[in-house]
Image 1 (cartoon, rainbow, N blue to C red):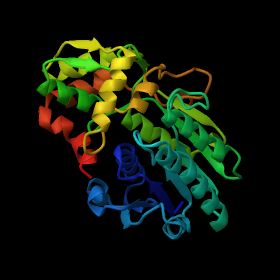
Image 2 (image 1 turned 45 degrees about the vertical axis):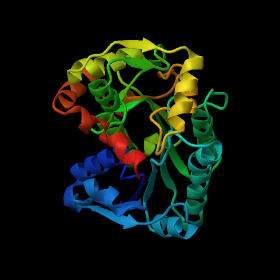
Image 3 (image 1 turned 180 degrees about the horizontal axis):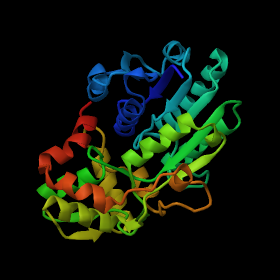
Length: 317
């Protein structure tokens, strides 16, 4: 294996994957190509010895073909949490279709694709439905595909626990949409290790894996833990669905990427937990880390403004 193309390699999961691959192989390992439209977003990975951050736009067919050509493995991590139906379809359906077709044209067979836990054709949110459509596109391709469905992913630079910790540092109370929704958050390092295993193990081809942590929480539980561990616990109260949708609509009207959209509220109307019917981290030899073992020291040592930075950077791009 000489070259791995990591689409979305400048993102939260992508950075961890690059670090894991570099640690696994060292300077003698495969070259990792990480394309980005904004070179400054690749600063966290460009120092790694085998990573090449490349200016490119994967929405351009010529750029995508140039990137895929000569790769041994393509990893697709590109996703979006907010947007219009057309934007979701372009990212979650059209892009996987274009990646698969480009791989076929240039003779690359191996594709590792990250979807999402809860992806389903009859799911309540456009995000979840288009994730399922993207999986369906790849299922009928002739490629050697492995699909991962992670739950909410947590870690040092996440936009979930850090966001709620930061908000509780500046707000007196936490009004919460989907407070009773059940989630099974998974550590970003475990997700990255699962991706490494898929790249290395041909036994994973043709399989879909659910990636979830060891514990199920309600969203309200997680928000309270974020406040507690960051030293800013606040009262948390759930919003009825109609009020949650109104709150999301107001946030959508603000400049930049909203902290909450109406489609996010739809996603929270169903639980986001492993079904137990598909292979999981244990099948890859990975024991998932507990949230309580990872996040308390990470949240305790950062101030409220710093915890909001992952969202602020995205909203301001």
